[in-house]
Amino acid sequence: MATSLRGAAGTAIEAADGTIVERRHVPDPDVEELELSLLLEAVAQRFGFEFRSHDRAAVKRKLHGLMARRGLRTVSQLQDRVLHDAAASSALLRALGVAPASMFDDPDEARQLLAVAEGCLPGAPLPKVWLADCAGAEQAWTAAVLLAERQLLWRTEIYATVPSDELLEEALGASIPLEKMGEYQRCYERAGGSGRLSEYFQLDGGRLVPVPQLKSRIVWAQYNLVTDASFNEFQLIVCRRALPDFGPLLRRRVLHLFHDSLAVLGVLGIDRELDEEARQAGQYSRLIAGQPWYKRIA
Image 1 (cartoon, rainbow, N blue to C red):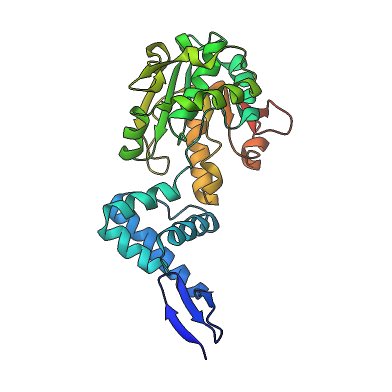
Image 2: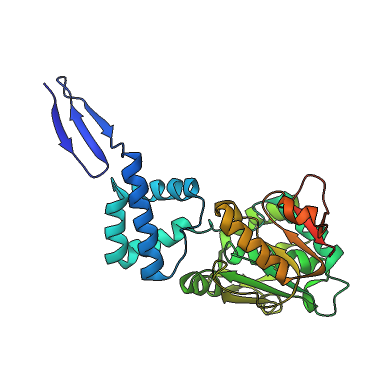
């Protein structure tokens, strides 16, 4: 004899010997695709965030993770929560966005960033760097520390943009737990850092925040890559963490935006090889073998 105990995430089956076996809910693919379209439409209309053109596989993966954490069986249940619960809507936007970075969490990327920055920033009178869809304050601080170490920061402006006011507020008020500094120092050294990372931070209420000289070189702003227009000309644009989630049409739109925003001889850092159209037009040349860092040459 078996007893069915239906829960939020699936059905628990009590077998004859008393053991509980959970049978996971398996959604109908066609129904879930419809639910997904309705959810993304609702998010666009209710909150103004455009995820309809994001890669569907990436969206589903992130939503399934969120649903599992909240004990929800269907996307429709998630939609109900999102539309009526501010905490749920905030959790959804975070889940679909770029995962927060920690300082120097990718030493290879940090070394590459420094190498291309040394090539493209010194020649500009007032160089500008754009961290598009920035993965939080610590990604911006990583870039600032790298530039400071090579004496490039003090006349450079770093524009770090995020897609929501909530993320903007978090970035502006961010700090680092004191106990993290040892780990970050080791990551900094793996990325090629030669000084003391602590020199770029100061204590504030038991936590660490950037020193004013470093913090003042970062301009934070809310900006939507999907809908907003070019707002400046940059010598270096970096968008390596958000682009993998974009579908083909959105990706093409964003790359055109970056092209319109990048100065000739400026550098673009993205997640994978530049599309064939741009390469065939002779507009870009690769800077690092096997890596998607490109100099605009036309």
